[in-house]
Image (cartoon, rainbow over all chains, first blue to last red; front, side):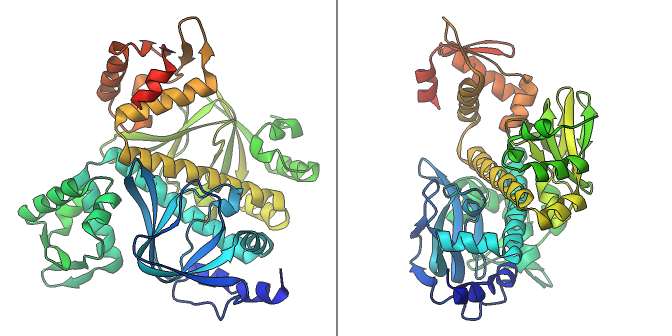
Length: 227
Length: 228
């Protein structure tokens, strides 16, 4: 690998950890940009890992699929890497990735990325920390799927959204409806009809108010008790 | 308790360590014995380090506020033997409880000492990476299985996995010992004991298995696969 590439890509560690930072012209010679249209497959679970993808602009979904059904594991945005697991064990992709809307990704070919990760301690550390954080989220997701009914899982998703992207107003916390009904259902580990029924039930009980572009969490206490 | 280099090498995660690294790890390891049902560490408590299962089985499980338990995995020498990987990096609390299922021997390494070794020895970093990768792959499969498959399909998958790992071919079919109670099995499959009992009954009535407590005979592997 060329020295200039290494130097340029060494900007990635802080960038991996903070979505606010962009690489300063990182590795133009080795880093390509690839753009995918909405719902286009970026890579498939079980396929050989061809390279490291990091979101430049837009969002991607990490999913697992079984018999055409999709379980959403995470939505990743600018600055986030997609599947890192193959760089730790040389295995195939652990999940599939799909574009969520139009997404532009940085791409570094697999052997270059692997060399770089394993020869740049701060980058390796960033990768290990990122995978570790995702592992913790996966443990929570698995137990939520096992313990909780759909309504409880939906309450949990709404509370998470309120915490990360909600705005407090006089009548409650307003959360933009950035997920499609299908994505919302997939995140809750259910189908669209069941997720929608549960959401409407919460509205009937005066816990949330559903509008076209946002959901208002009117009774946080009850929502938290049900989550 | 003396830990030998060979003891360490028997844990596959250490298989690629050179003798110098193994000697270093041996100096830092404390071997601890636990009797069945002993809690090794608890969900929500600070994690002091990494645990490796040398002998016996350890159940990693999460507990809901209602008291219901969900078994994330059963750690043993040949499968997911390392515990404590999450808190190793983020310094946060243990995401799960760990309970010995058998008479168990655990090798323990203090968190800071593990990180110190990793700073100078690539073998330890490779080990961390493999542990994180193994657990990530396992939990992704587990999550999608829970979301996208019903309890009977998950039970069939588990029976097929066990048949492959530990099944014994007999005149009747493939015989296996589940090694866990039906309650624990239900906790592993994210179901209730009643649901699992119902699933077993359905498979028995279909003539696909013969269940006698923890001893199961799979009468037709092909038919069982077809029902998954």
